[in-house]
Image (cartoon, rainbow, N blue to C red; front, side, top):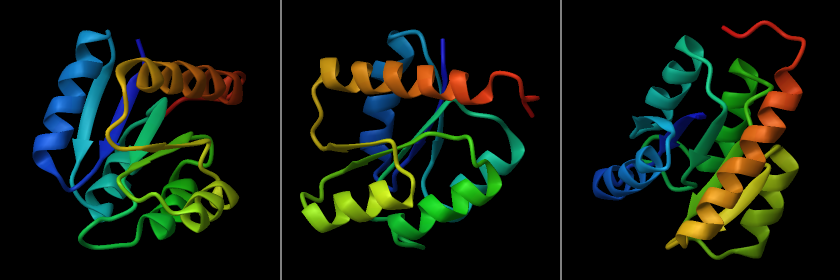
Length: 130
C-alpha cells in the first residue's frame, strides 16, 4: 500500500480517482489547491503525489518546486488534461517523474503509481520518514 496525494481542483475527478486508487489498496489524501497541497506535504509523508497543472491558486509547474522544497524526495506525477509538449518538458525539468494525460486508463495509472512508489521507497531508504 502506498500513501498518495491527489492535487486537483476538480472535486468530482479526485473523488472518482481516489475511489479507484483506494480499491487498488492505496491510502489517498486529496488537496484541491496548491496551498492545501503544500500544507498536506508539510504535515505528512507521501509516497507519490499526483498534480494537475491547472490549479486555482497557482500554476502546477510552480507547485512542483514548492512541493520539492518541502519534501525533496516526493515523486510527483503530473496528471492533467493539458496536452502540451512544452509543459511536459518543463514539468520533467522541474522534477516530475512522470506525466499522464486525462483521462488515464486504469492500467497506465496503476503502473505509474507502482513505478513512482518503488522510486520513492528507494529514495527514502536509509532516511527518516516524517
